[in-house]
Amino acid sequence: MGLLDVQGVGIAFGGLKAVQDFRLDLPKGALQGLIGPNGAGKTTLFNLLTGVYPPDTGTVKLGDRVLNGLKPHQIAQAGLARTFQNIRLFGDLTVLDNVKIACWSRGWTTTLDALLRTPRFRAEENAITTRSMELLQIFELDKRADESARFLPYGGQRRLEMARALALDPKVLLLDEPAAGMNPQEKVALRNLIRDVRDRFGLTVLLIEHDMGLVMEICERITVLDHGVVIASGTPIEIQKNPAVIEAYLGASPVADASPGAH
Figure 1 (cartoon, rainbow, N blue to C red):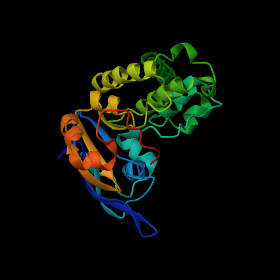
Figure 2 (figure 1 turned 45 degrees about the horizontal axis):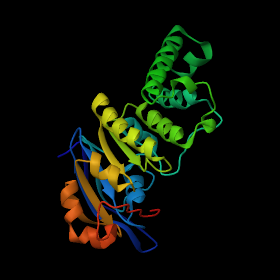
Figure 3 (figure 1 turned 30 degrees about the vertical axis):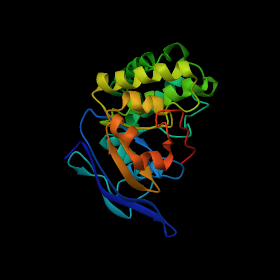
């Protein structure tokens, strides 16, 4: 059993089966991709894993803990964090405060400590500020810590969302289209960053991405969804050569600029 063990997960909306009998055994330290054409169910699956939708069938386990029935914030506290296809930052807060909020969600002091500004609260506040700045430095955002998050360029906002997710100290990180809206130079930097973050923090990463070059280069294994059903799973080379995958959406040249649309 892997660190993230998903068995038979499915959900239907109004009789339409969005995800069917999804299974995944994600070992610790893995960097795996999840791809598929329009309407494949990729983001729906992320919503199932993170408690946004309760699955109709199946179980989701993180280590020895069953996540079914937990609320999204409880699942995040258990060690499963995510970014979003549509960026969801607190735009009017500073870059630093966006990360500090995530750190505070794992804090140990009480509301009374905060009201009274106790030594314990001040010590935690200092520790959180230090930790947040360390994360911003990794993502090259430390020099913009005091700016409003909405003033960051699009690529910077994507990196900030990743930094905020890491502030939750997750075991597994789900990245939903982290390269969306990035220029080619930013995508190259992102490839290196994802690998570095995985290795530095000992993370397990599941990645949804439409940039096939990025997926094929950094992912060790890839799972392919089509109409909510897994049609293939294997190494990048195996996926490129799989007839079912080619038929689903990659076309005659699987690594060419395939650009499936929204989920």
